Amino acid sequence: MFEKCLPPIYWDGDAVAILDQRVLPHQEKILLCSKPQQVITAIKNMSIRGAPAVGVAGALALALGARDLQAADTQTFRRKFVRLCEQVKNARPTGNNLGWAVEKVYSVLLENPGADVPELQTLIRRKADAILAEDVRDNVAIGKWGKEVIPRGARVLTYCNAGALATADYGTAVGVIRAAYADDPTVEVYACETRPFLQGARLTAYELQCAGIPVTLITDNAAGSLMQQGKIDVVVVGADRIASNGDTANKIGTYTVAVLARTHNIPFYVAAPRSTIDPSLADGSGIPIEQRDPREVTHLFGRPVAPKDIKALNPAFDVTPSKYITGIITEVGVLQKPFKQSIRKALEA
Image (cartoon, rainbow, N blue to C red; front, side, top):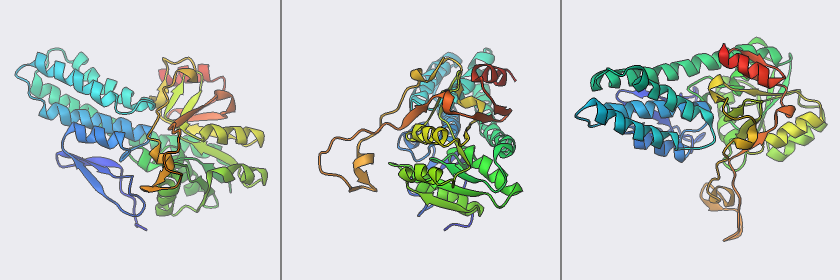
């Protein structure tokens, strides 16, 4: 096991360095991306994943692209940059942070109509760097707010990976756990394995071990039994997109955990920055659900685990209705029901 977890994304000279999450925890492999298409590929193949991290990756991809765009005049640069924005935005559909980050970077063009190409390139890079730094600050703030909802000595269940690897650093749901553990080292964690990509087994367990936080790995279908035995006190998960009424898209299986938590009267919290909130959606029915390669279900690390030619379904996300959510932990506070009002106020803050 490595002594210190590497950050998932950062600048290495003029290249974007991405920690390849497909080979963790057994290998720490860095992908150096000098072109935006390389970052887009890393997003699509899940070398980098987690909604906030993907948003940061999208912003840095645009900075790379802006730097190398061949344009004789500002109008040509703007036209080409708009096309690049569309390519980055479409890399993955469900997480809101990617589109949010692209819009933030694109706003540089709108806010600087008289800027020449070198000025725009500088401003785009500056905006991308600000998005990266802001994500880390927001995650630390989420941890500070979130630790207040974790009881002393709590046994915390988390699902998928919403740690440093899913963000620019520190993490959202795991950030809450880190902050709680720093105040109370009796906190323990149960991490679900999270089939089929095993983000919990490979990534969350890896991160928590690096941080020295006690963690027990469980199969996804063991969560209900642990709750029934009174061994879980609170659930904290991340999010990929949150509708204006609080309905939340997260890794497939989150909905099941939320229903189980409600059945056993266990608080269920979502931790996410405000950039995950999509105010254009009235509820979760409008959240696009990414359908991934069925081979992720029928194969494990390239080896078949199911009969040949079996039909498989592989939705990457599900939507948890807001009625199952106790609170939404953001960088500006823990949002309570009714979520429509608290979300609106949070976005205005």
